[in-house]
Length: 197
Image (cartoon, rainbow, N blue to C red):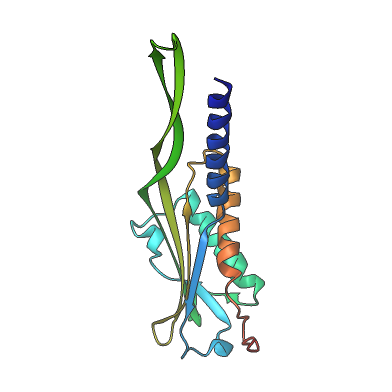
């Protein structure tokens, strides 16, 4: 019986470590237009209508996303304007239900009575344990569009698991950190282009 408990503990620990390894921040991908002249961009404004406000109204989450994106752009020297900006900034966010299925070999035990030995025997055997996890995956897109050419010049995408956070302060902190992670991949500053690495 003690062997059974130890084996169960080891399998449980392995599963916990596997799940902990997956609990990271969002996956960030970016793409820049190689023909865009980022040195000439100095101002930005929000695209109208924003993809996250396509129904014609804003929400607390959309206002927070706009404030976080604006803070990131202004920290890079861009000036916010509603009159003829160099760049339009568009934000899109959506969620979808996902399912992960994982199989892991696990040990189990069969008990049987031996009439010859007049006692019970424990026989271990291996089987696959299948676990199904359902979760919500969220995607946040930031598009920068050259206003003069009406052409997408940079896109940042964050994809990750979404928790249904009821605390507004925690939700806002998560929006801010995700926006910062996306813009951490944006190498440009207003009026300049970084030197090649």
